[in-house]
Length: 391
Image (cartoon, one colour):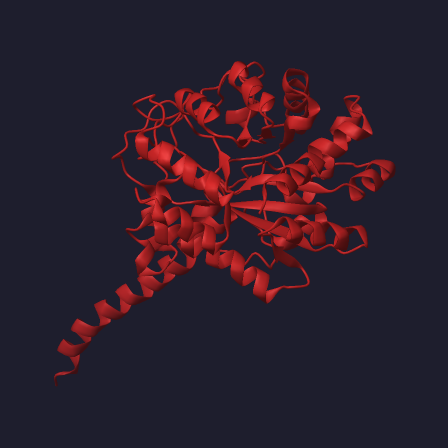
């Protein structure tokens, strides 16, 4: 006689549990599908000679946010832009995996309040990240690094985490012998992960981070963001952080930094800088891009600039226009300072994924690039820079 009242209590609980389970299983995939899009297109026709040239290249990419998402990077995915199978298809040798720890709703390029809402908190909970990551940005970076360490351990014949210049040299030698092994590096998307503590630089370095972005979409303890409120330069903490990064040999990325921060870092740092994913303001006058003059100063100190594939950086994301942005950069700062910086899996829509990079080689040939220019831009510049800067 009491079963009905018990069912009335238990059934709603069961329904809620089923709905919750469905949410945590399905929501992350749907969120990523809505953010990391590839424009629908017919397969790019790549001539045989072009494909042969592409297959002979050493290809590297300075920026992909793939560790942010709930995907097994060992498996070919129907969503997003990057995983090991697609990197192999695109003949990629080196991929910098950049850990996102804080990002605003809408990713406004012109203004974001430091205390505005953070999408990554909700994403971490929806993807069932460890509770330690839910309100600690350092732990988020450490957790995202764990994914790459797992990839290294689970697929040693397919993937190698690059920590030193010797690791890099060994990988290049393997690929020259015909191996398709892919090298991965760890970088941060902004230094929010430091949580205002210099000792966290050492902690992140010990975990494998070899490049650190200073800002993302918000101003932080180090200084002003290109998309923040203050437009200020380095704080004293920021200056101390730069010195500690240089002491450890961590490469410094100013991709989202305010112009004043870039100027301050150029004056303070002894090492060349990276702009890991960007466009050129003279080619695409977007608030996402810093001035051509600053780009020339970065290159003059030996820096490396990664050209992105999304509209915010290049204004039109078709392959032909991306190649026009690359040509603009070569003409502006010299071919030795230009690389690829896709921003794949960075909540952007692109015209192709990492398996289709031969389309860039094809468009470069159509645009009259020399083979030397193609080889340098597609990866040789990145390899040279890393060989000089890695411990």
